[in-house]
Length: 342
Image (cartoon, rainbow, N blue to C red):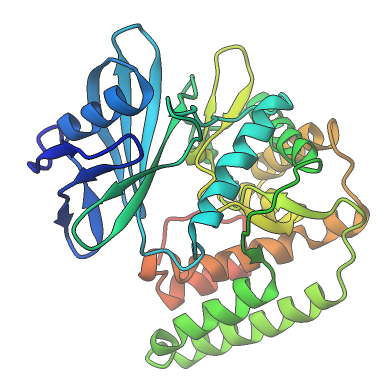
């Protein structure tokens, strides 16, 4: 990956870096490490040492090891995302992270550019793409199936800390809502061409399940702090477990307004089947950690499995590929069940 790219970088002004970009696959924009290094040198007055592309998908993410010893994450935002409409959506995320960091929440936060602000731009001949530099989260990821109860409790504590700190976030920028319309209606609309060719039993179960979820959400009262800014994608791949026992979140690309219980339900996926004793212990530990920071209402607790099903329906259209209907049906029957299988 270190050799990716090959375009030239030219400095146009203090406000913009014009870069000839290379299209990888169909939609992905990628810069070479040399180009990223020049941007960081110019825009952040840092001297990068090693630069590695570590993730490529909706966004390109690079690990930056600076000569001074600090480590950062550099993100080049992709544009083929239905939940990002304008630059205001990106500024919402960055301002939120700065707010959370200032309130002591365990998150990766954006680094201010030398000319001010945290959002930069990269221009090609026809489009403008945006980027940001983030602090690096120490520690390592842990697969959900390998979580210990102590780690699960720390995960719940960290997620609740994010929710509580987000309560005081005020912004003029826009962001989407992860409501029933997005989780169910839009997901099924995108999924319907696949469902038309699926086994009738699977297609029928998915449609019926969506109806039941919608009915339960319509009568759901989460309480005064149950709706607010959420991470939107709080899986273990988006947090690091630190040797001191704490957990830190990153990648708020899917953040928005939603039910706080949705974040918890999303986090509880892959914790083994409902009747599995270890899975129950892990879920109980996550909830105990969460409740140590933010109270969870009875209504929120009761709706967790339903919100887990809603998360899987949304996952059914993830990255434009989604889940095979047979697998989605299995996961809807047990939202905590294993990923493996048909």
